[in-house]
Length: 454
Image (cartoon, rainbow, N blue to C red):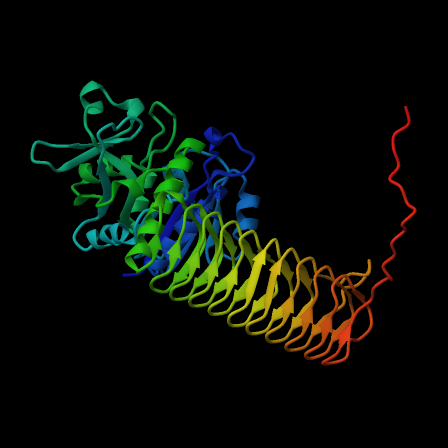
């Protein structure tokens, strides 16, 4: 049987108090709706539709590459009305699964259980047990435990409000039956809306078989209505990410102080110290060590590499056995070969640094090709920008660059060359020779330090 998944994402999200549509607020660095779409796609549906309304242009623009059919709900008349807008996307004999754009962490296994429930039922509903069910629709059963209906909080009497089995909102139904129930919905309720949940009572009244499937992970079904709930969901998401890494052989020094805002591929025996942030796609080789307070964005870190405290790595590749930091910054386009040392307060941009080279202190290297076994002294800068264009510096293997040197690009330093400390080099430095620029030192014995006049 073919499957259509409908994601409801048209709510205004007024409690977020934001100009940004609720489903675009980030969780783990990605919009809430992106998480839901990814989960939906993991079920391999034949058709996938997203119902948008408030801020629809922003939603569609932000997720323009998502492989979904966009359906607009121009008038906000409730969840039943929203589903009815998207139902024409489904095939006549499809199974239809309803998801929500502001409930991002529902596991695929729970959703598959709903679809499987349609093998012997016309309607399958997901429930969960909550110690405090305030705000949720209650699952009302008969004396034999069979589901009768769902009563929304605002419409429930005292006995119904005491029920702690609640509706998650997630359900699956056969398209033909769902069409008939949606046609019968009435806005005769406290909110004057067409409730999707009323389909249960309609199905029971018809004698259609209905199943209510308790969720195996109630935390994942918690929706997001304000920034407090968003923050709580962020911590749940981060805890799950940290646990997955630890089960894969990664040491996480404190799971509560790790933030993953993208995807991480980590080999065994990687260590992540406290307050590490991993953004975009990050690859960590076997035995890599990421020190405290580091930020890695779209980074590839080789086996055995060490990133020391407070370093920032962006769009860079770090070879095996490299040592970076503390307080280093690798900007986009940086590539470090095996065993490179980059020390404190060093910045590298769009440069390739050869095997075993060292840039240990207070230097800037930009638009540069650095050879093997090169030593770049403290305070060295490559002057790569003339105010209009960027130019390249080339440093040959085994060169030695003295401290406080300015290399004015475009310039080439030959293999094995030595540059004297304090030099400004704007012409090629020949291989194997000492090149320096230095004004003569002068001492004036008759000079006296000025004193302040009274």
